[in-house]
Amino acid sequence: MKKFGLATQIFVALVLGIIVGAVFYGNKTAIAYITPIGDIFIHAIKMIVMPIVIGALIVAVAGVGDMKKLGKLGGKTILYFEIVTTIALAIGLLAANVFHPGSGVDMSHLQKGDISAYQQTANATQQQGFAETIVHIVPKNIFESMAQGDLLPIIFFTVLFGLGVAAIGDKGKPVLHFFEGVLEAMFWVTNQVMKLAPFGVFALIAVTVAKFGVSTLLPLGKLVLAVYATVIFFAVVVLGINAKLTGTNIFTLIKILKEELILSFTTASSEAVLPNIMKKMEQFGCPKAVVSFVIPTGYTFNLTGSAIYQSLASLFIAQMYNVHMSLTEQVTLLFVLMLTSKGMAGVPGASFVVVLATLGSMGLPLEGIALIAGIDRILDMIRSAVNVLGNALAAVSMAKWEGEFDKEKARRYVDSVKESNVA
Image (cartoon, rainbow, N blue to C red; front, side):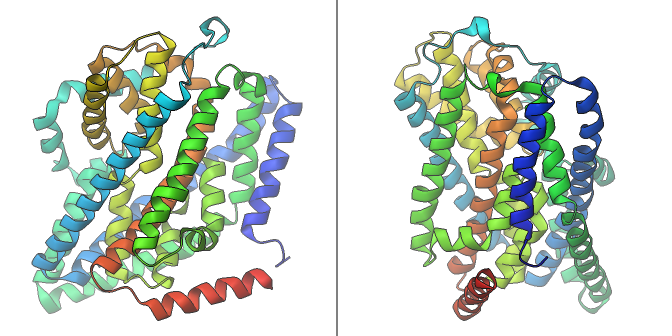
């Protein structure tokens, strides 16, 4: 059985899911039976994410201890995230101008998806304004934020709490040990949940294919190709250059994260692999304090795959409705996306909500997003995988920037991964 690693099992499940989905295309009874399997897996993933994010951040902040040092790490991390996501947004806009995926789309053959839930969220967030968004970062009830999975207020609270644990010295040590125990226990739970991954992947893919079929892709094939080509270009070239600057090879990182990239791609969820990438980046030579701070924070601020999709989708809709956007308007669109993507981080279906809010503020037709709702999951798969790769690389970059990257540990870990692949 050892020959069939998790990556192989997931790939087999993916292929079987496509076949079963194609066989039962349009069969509502079969969809009803298969859907709960995928839902159980996604629920199990969501169940483990919040305790890990909270535990990791408290351990990281209390581990750093010094507020000055933490401020330095936090400032560098946010600056890095802002630069990389802005490049991602710009590349998305450039790709839309090169590929013109929205030109010549026959809208009469497209089915409209239900986007009412996303629209309500977008409207509510748009009405908030910038000041309200800042106020929202400070939670009035941390348990309410946890229940809603709202990461920004949770990060704010856990950073303060971690500083408090460090500030009280010896009295804080039992609290720190408790959260270290929580983290270790949650990593064990993660390993058990991951055993369900092939079943979850099978169900999620089968349901998607059975619901929409391959025919849904054809009218929007140009958009799918544009998003995939742009995201892969960004991963190989932009993240590749970034990795080279930090003395790492992007393909080495891809090999290390092979299972996590396949899992995040097939489930269209970067949350599914959060604990695993934290563990692997530690083994790769990044200090625990850096990994525990950078990666959970990156899940809010460093979603590069999503950024590419958001800018490409916005221009795609403009092109579909023959709305010409000048260079000035596209630069404005870039800045609007920079703001809206930060304000809606952690919102369910955040990328969709960001595009909706952006279309509204730029005066573009909102119903355009409903026409691509059917293929959103196909697009979500690739952007989730690149979000994972981008956050793993961010941990390496920050560890190097802080001068705390363990090259020898990284080399030993890469060798062990090569040996296990050969075995």
